[in-house]
Every structure is written in C-alpha cells, then in structure tokens.
Length: 89
Image 1 (cartoon, rainbow, N blue to C red):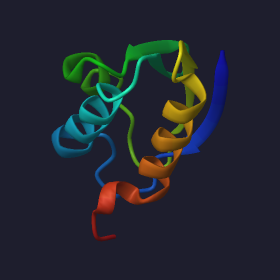
Image 2 (image 1 turned 60 degrees about the horizontal axis):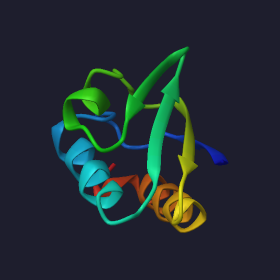
Image 3 (image 1 turned 180 degrees about the horizontal axis):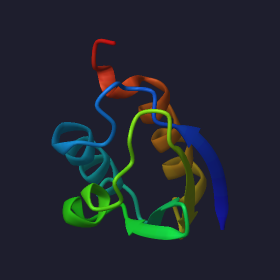
Image 4 (image 1 turned 180 degrees about the vertical axis):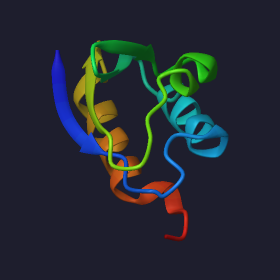
C-alpha cells in the first residue's frame, strides 16, 4: 500500500466538480484508491462516497492506494489535490 497526506486547498472543498474529477482520475488506474478523513473512508471510485466524506477547505486527507498502479495513482491524486482542482481561489 502507498499513502500520502494532502490538504484540500480549494475554497469550496470536495463539492461536486472536484469529486467528479477525483472519480474520473481514479478510474484511469488499476488500483483501489481510498480517501481517509477523521476516521471515515471513501472509495475514490464512487462520487457519492467522495462527496459524503464532507471534506471542507483546509481538511487533511490521507490517500491510500493498492494494486498494480498504486504508486502512479498516488502521484496523480496528490497532483490533483495540489492543483486545487484547477479552481480559482
């Protein structure tokens, strides 16, 4: 398993558009990707699961990846979070 911590840096947190971007990106890899926040875990392949995580701006999320593409998926997920989901701040 590969893990990393990221900060939700876009003002609106993980609302519908960034959640969709996460799910779309997760689907590109042969890996199980989980997002963990305050004892709750979301499947990054499910938009409902990601949105119900309730990650607001400033939240620290742990990303966990397992599978063939685990390391590549982790790097891509970290980069997506670091980009602020390309939303203006």
